[in-house]
Length: 552
Image (cartoon, rainbow, N blue to C red):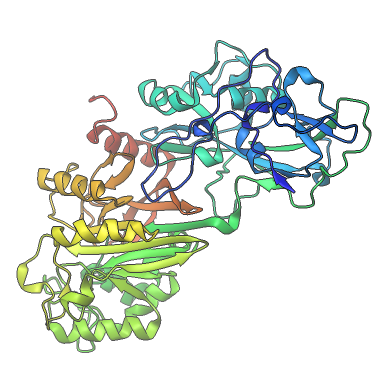
């Protein structure tokens, strides 16, 4: 058996082969290799393999990545377009049975990350492909590589050249960011953080419950005879190749500030412990890893929530742990500045409670050494390292040699630790309890230090401190969100009610990007998903303050 890597032999309906796709830059930990970097194979005539009557000659209209992954017998040879292959690997039409598929290739409709639109119907996409009028909030033009254009032309028919343009694969992302009305179609394996993946008929290939059978950008490939040979001996496989395998996925949901105190605690007493998660609990439960930053310690002698306590010295009734359990929380960040409000005793009790309940924690601990230990998680082949620290203080809450508390931000330590973890194959995720500001934009120090940590190699840098949500940035393709806003906390001021919950997606050892979930706090305790109008307004505001949309 031999692995055929004849990337230059894909047959297309043109005089020349399409340019090889160049994968866009990802994080240093990601090890995906661009097929464009591979040299062209030696032509079949120069291999020294004698021509035999039992050699099967095959061609393809298929992605090069697919061709490189096919394992075929030694009696099968890829040939050039003008060499009359006996069999051709082609996209299948809808009448072909699933058993005929030798490969299933998932494509994604993508746009520049600061795109407000979230979805499009397949019917609207087809109208754009054919050059017919589309709604004003949809793209003006589709862009795609020559390779993808050749495949989709076989599936959908000819595209209108005024509305569908071929662009070099390594230029798609840059053009989409420059021409915001251009959306692209790319193979799933080329998704990276600066793309926003758009839904088609409410489906996204980033979904946990993705069904390739009903997703209309799934292309199935099978063999078709183009010569005299009637039996594709050695070609058929019972295990079709796919570029998207569910068992390689991991989702991490990062959230903002949680403090089960004051009016939030009052509502929990009145409406039930699980009241805060009634509307967004599924977002937490559906994540493979659900994170919260709980800024308050549980305390057995915590004063009762009723009558309402309005002070700033916070603690939570241990019974409230039920909310975290029912909501499906997996990981708890301990960088908050209220964790020692009632001293070290309740904090140590909280650590014991988390251990007893099976919650994993990071960013704080019983000593400085424990507090700065990364939380290492392995799931579906993805290795994540969560690191958290408190930048804002006050200094007297930071963990010491024999003192419990949140971890102090030590940038010299991070400068060594982040590359060390990356070198071990982990994807570093750093979360900060940074300085709080009542503004859409964080302070300059926050911007500088997030950038600094991203350049150290963190694939995600996220702010857990913000009661007032902040904007975003990218540094060398690494995602920075300066503050997500509250999760479960009672601030009902108009601009404090808006929340981000960031659903980060990892696949096959690399970071693909984030889906921004948006919520609005109700009744001092219960966030709910935003309406489409609320979401559009929020995204426009935060993309604008991030410098990605023009000022009004």
